[in-house]
Image (cartoon, rainbow, N blue to C red; front, side):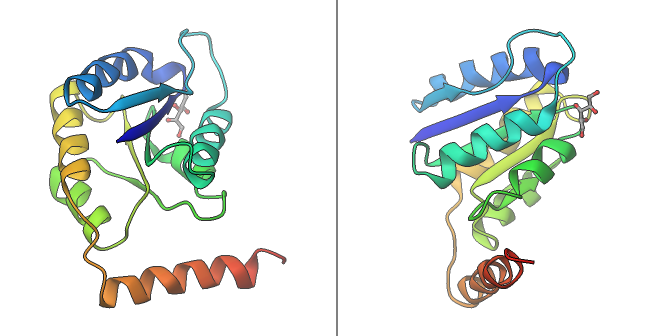
Amino acid sequence: MKIAIGNDHAAVEMKNLMMEYIAELGHTIDNYGTDTQDSCNYPEYGEAVACAVAQGRADCGILICGTGVGISIAANKVKGIRAAVCSDVTTARLVKEHNDANIIAFGARIVGIELAKDIVRAYLDASFLGGRHAERVKMISEIEMRRGQD
Ligand code: RB5
């Protein structure tokens, strides 16, 4: 799988450890995040990863900032993106099974590296269940279509 990763200054170390882990799992990873701890703006990195996923340059994305919240809010502004913040393994599995999340986000100031690895693994190992969940995901896309012009 080809994975796009992005981060702000709060998550450089976490991003580097996560890239090593993703490579160990046998996936390809493209780094769209900052590599320095100089203060920067998380929306830029959320948008970069979201565009890579929305345009098919990556199969899915991983976003990390201090909390995972700001960077995921930014990513969710890109059409077709369903970015979900997860701080536990069960949510990480369910956002793929039920919501077909195409980006997972978490906070480097919230979860430690071992939990972050388990979260990412649970997300990558899960599959979208379709059925009634597909209907609901379609409803989300329809909101995007209806409200995109407002
Ligand atoms: C940066 O200090 C911090 O605001 C950012 O990483 C993130 O937590 C925002 O949601």
